[in-house]
Image (cartoon, rainbow, N blue to C red; front, side, top):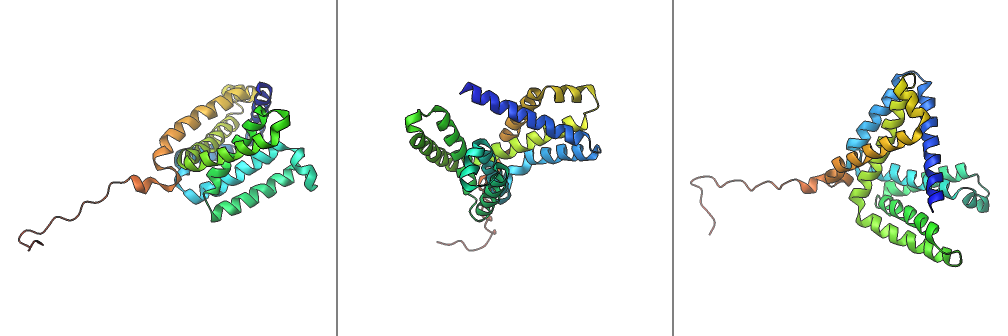
Length: 226
C-alpha cells in the first residue's frame, strides 16, 4: 500500500511541476491569473451547488479512470486519455441534472481505490464493490464537507502551480519546481484552510443557516386578536 501511495504522490508532484513549468513559459499574467482564480475557488467555489457538482464529478471520474489506466481502456478499445475524457463528460452531464451524483462519486471512488489496495486477491471484486458502496453513502451523507474539500483542494492546487509558474525565474520559484513535494505540501495546507473557511456555506446550504426574520411588531393601538 505504501508503494502505491508513494507512486501516486510522485505522479502528482510531477504533474504539478510540469504544469507550473508550462505556465512559467507563458507571459506572467497567465500564471498570475491562474493563481488568482484558484484563490477565488479555494475561498468561494463550494457555495454554488451545481457548478461544484459538474466540475467535481467530471474531475473525480477522470482521476478514477486515470488511476485504473489501461486496464479500463483495453476492454472498450479506447485509450486511457480518451476514456477519461468520456467519463468526465458523462459524469459532468449527469451531475448537472442530479447534483447529488458528485458527492456519491467523490466518496465511491476513494472507497473503491482504498478497498482495492486492502482487498485479498481471491475476494477483490466483492471488497472493491463494498468499498465503493460504503464510500458513496458516506459521500452523500457528508456532501457539505466533500464539496468544501474538493473545491478548496482544486483551488489550492491552482494557487500553488500558478504561483510557482509566476515565480519561475526567481529563487523561490526554482526551489518549488525542483521540489514538487513542497508545492504539494503548500497546496494541502491551503486546501485545509479553504475547507475550514467554506464549510459553513458549502454546497449551497448557507441560506439555511441564516437567522429567520422576526415577525413584525404589532402596531400600537391596533386591535389584537383574541
